[in-house]
Length: 203
Image (cartoon, rainbow, N blue to C red; front, side):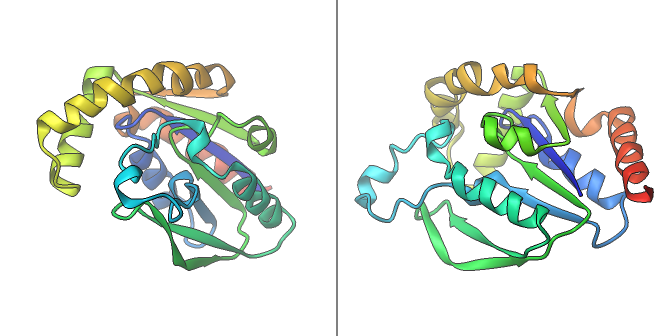
């Protein structure tokens, strides 16, 4: 089994990199564990206070459960991956049944942040992008997908995203085996990654 961690800032193009890798591999060979599925449940917190949760801080995630699930997959056991609602900031009763596969990809802004999880990875990738590019993508995504105003997105970027990126996400670069600049548009880096994974699958 090959365990790959893919980290990078919000709007860096991580999801595109992951999608392109999965599309270029044989169907059914890859399991994707989005770090976003492992946000701590906030159902015990009053609704009006949930808006204050900092989703870009390492404390927002249930690292122990994510590490446990990776270890179970490594041991050939299936897992029940949690699902999370951004609308209510709560973990949902539904889970996703996941069987072990040859390649496990853990993808998220802080995928390389936790030492225990990092030590399980065979390959660590950091997707890098210019801060201006990331901000533009975040504005486009949050306005279209999450119904926020551009002003609200920029206020949140300045207050939360940028400081968290500098404090926690950017320092994870030093743990990466491979840094992919320009995110999903870096065809050469994605091809190299895919070749590496295919070589592992052959062996």
